[in-house]
Image (cartoon, rainbow, N blue to C red):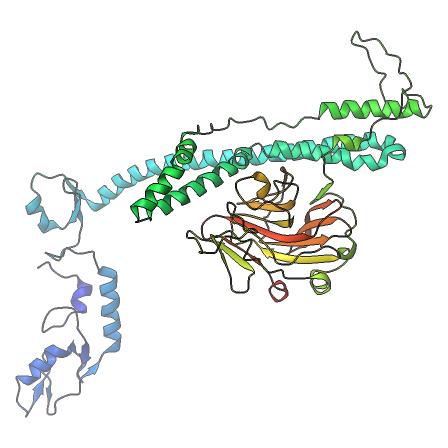
Length: 532
């Protein structure tokens, strides 16, 4: 047994020579293990008892009280030295056998003859050198990844800055045209914003293009899993025969290539600038003003000579160059939203708030509807509902029971439980059966929606999508419908910031509608109590 350290000797019982186990003190001041001193007293007569250390005589058997201080010191000593000594010899683990890759004490060297044995400090230095090399490589990769992310952010900032510069240039041109075509100014600026958005979408465009494919793959895998769980061989073969060709066709489709890095530079839309210059000259000519006045250069012929500007009919409205739908998004000037103007969220909920309930007859059979009919969750298994003419049989979507054909209405939807979902409204005429894109929310003329896909948000109607740019994705969406005024608007409920609004006449009753994709993901319509 290895010699104990001075600290260990001071904390050891003089009878058993081991660390104190339940230390007790005698009146003379010496401390022993309780079991050791009781064995010592048991061997003595009832006439007198002696201290094993100093031999002081006690004519009565002393009362053995636990020495709490010594017990605590022993406990801390054991905690500080656990695992640091050789289990076999008791020595400190000061050596390391590289041959066997294990720690050892001095006496263990007899079993490791001709092995490569070094001190633990030397081996630590060696291992630290290896670890430092790996650390350097990891740090280099981390720096590269950080630089890449930073470059993407810088590119985004450059695009934003370039877009702002172009908007300023356009504003300068429109200052001259303001008394003639002031209402077209915002349309042209929105066209620039649209160009900017298209540039910023270059990184995630392939994700958007793959959504439909992903939906088909998810559906096919679900049907395959259903076949795998079919124990009836006849039913299995019937399903296999019916669906095999579609599985093979889907599996044989070529994989989309990884997109190449697209240029992120932002340039002025040349046709837009040329048409603005042409319109400015045309307006001046039409009004009998000098078309070459102010800072406008005289138009040149291909040979470089000054061209004669001829009088022409009034120009076409610049709105024709903007997006086909009237859209206001975050940061853009929107048409007045009537009842929401100047009202707090609490006032809006009190005045026009509602909480629609889901129509179970329209819900896809893999959607689990909550007992209050306001939450739906995607499940792996069928819910066993009977077929219904109103039920969506391909897309995991559901309409609400209530419809609106007049007035103003506002409701809120919690989208925090889903990575991919859609929130919006639809006519009751929206198709329900099959894979027709018109059945998918926002892909036909009978539905309007706001879509969340991970951290990206977009709006769609009639198969036309527009991405919304926002710094922090919202967890709850507020939907405002002014049926008579032809207004549909989406808000983030924490700040009541307008995310998107569209103005167009509605011709049929509109139903609130939800869609969600992804196993176990859910969306929930909030009640006024939840929204408060």
